Length: 372
Image (cartoon, rainbow, N blue to C red; front, side):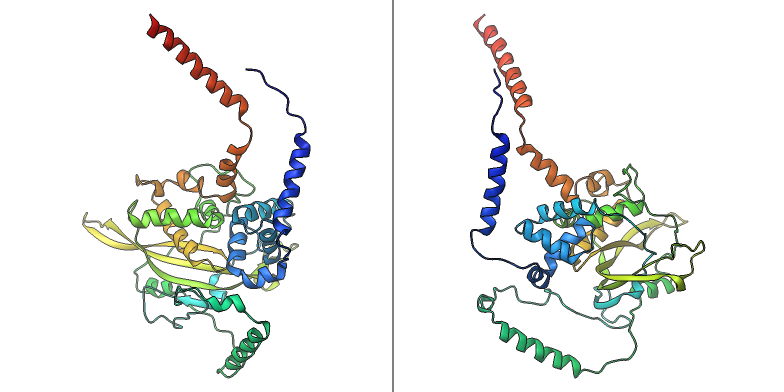
């Protein structure tokens, strides 16, 4: 079969790009980046998490450019991230220093510091609110003013309140093992090729960068039966975490000399997973292990699913696919997975024609045998 060179490919691509812009503009409406940042915070949080770049403005810009396509927005933001210089590495951030706006535990009713419900859709009715079709700026401003007045009438404290970790109280009872601090520098999966078995620092990075739906799906698969990991959420925290960098000219770090460079909003989860172990007398006993999840912004479902997979990957001896780090880590990345599937739209003329020729040749030979 002959092949004809395609002419005018560049013009066709340029026309396609123009048509793409037309589809975005034909409604003759403009959505401001600030509007996306203000009204679509959950989408912005998800794009930042999967892109490994904390910038609400750039995430909102990517969402606008991608017309709301999450996979395209993440692709755009990751591509931009790859052009940025890395000037410093932050010092380890302790979540006890988080300025918490939401903190709950499914394990205990009464926890030190109390349950803090904060902003969440968990307690709302899943009914369409048709009043949103007629929102009024003045009415919204009036509601905000009233809400702020209510806040001002509440008793306040002059000191910042930090919340202790729930698991620390269980450790004091000897119910959870206490580990020594591991100061091994973490692997950076954005700068080093990952090999297996991977260190836990690499696994956690890939999980927190993972596509939200994929992480949730595999976490659900494990919960449903493929591993039967059924944790109890010990603690969910959503809040602002301060970030510091060490003084660049100091050889020996002194925390007092660290520079505060800003803060990030994160969701952190610690799940308690029951496991059966054998004691020194070979009798089965039950213990708890901790699964950990953390991601940018408020995305509690992803963080919980991440904590499930974290605990699964600590036990590679299991035969379930959710315990296979190569299976999990290589299939949850949004850019890798969507990019590889999308590449199927690119020309495969030569390979497909080769397969057709092979099939035709086989059938041709088979037909001659039938005639004989």
